[in-house]
Length: 309
Image (tube, rainbow, N blue to C red; front, side):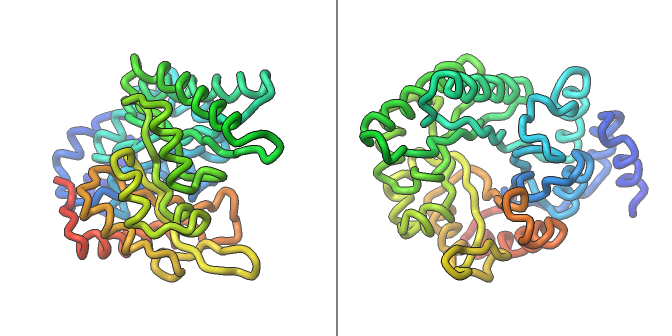
C-alpha cells in the first residue's frame, strides 16, 4: 500500500490532513457511479469510504449505516463529527449523492402520517447540513380499500409539504419509482400535480421494467425531464418471485437503460442499489460492488459516457 494512502487511512474519520494527501495522489478518472449503503448494512463508515475509493466509485447513496436506518442518529453525520466527515469525503473526491429516507406519503392515520412527515423534514435538514442535493422518499402505496384519486391526493399533499420544507434548504425531494408507483402515468400525475422545482424523480429502472412492464426508452420518454438520480440492478425469475443477481447476469436490460440515459444527456449518478439489507441471501458487497463497478464502467464507456474529471 502506498505511503500516502496509508497516511490517509490512518486519519480517516478525523478529517486530519486529508486534503493535502489527496493532492499528492494520482487517482484514475472515475465514472459517475455510486452505490447505496443498503448493499452493505454491516459496514462501518470507514469501510464504506475505503471501499468506494478502492473500487472507483464517485458517489455514495446513504441508506443506513451499520443497521441504523435513521441517518439523523448516526454520529458521523451529527455534531462535531459532521465537519470531519465532510472533509474525508472531499479528500477522497467522493460525494453523497442523496439521502434515502423511509418516509412514505400514502400514510393516512394522523399520528403515523405526522411521523412520516417529521422524518422527511429531518432528512431534508440533514441534507442541507451535509450539502447533499437530494432526499429520496416514497409515494409507496395506493390502498385498495379507498378510491385511487383520494390516495393520490394524499400523496401529492405530502410531497407538497416536503417540497416547501426543502426549498429554503436548497434540497430537492425525489419520489422513487417503487411500490405502487412503478407506472409512468401514475408518476407523471404526481410529479405534475406537485409541480415544484424542489420535487423530481429517482428512476428505479429495475422496478419500471419488472413491475411496471415498461421498456426503458418508453419510461424515459415520458419521465426523463424529471429524472435526477437512478437505481440500477439486475434480477431473474426465481419460482414465483425474482432474485437479485450480479449486474449483467439476469434479464433486466441494464445496458439498455444506461444507453438510454447517456444518450439523453443524463447528468446524474448511476447508482447500484444492491438490496442486501432486505435480501441477506444475495452476494456479499465485497463481491457485488467491484463487479458492478467493472460492468458499469464497460456499459458507460460503450454508451459514450465520459469519465469525471
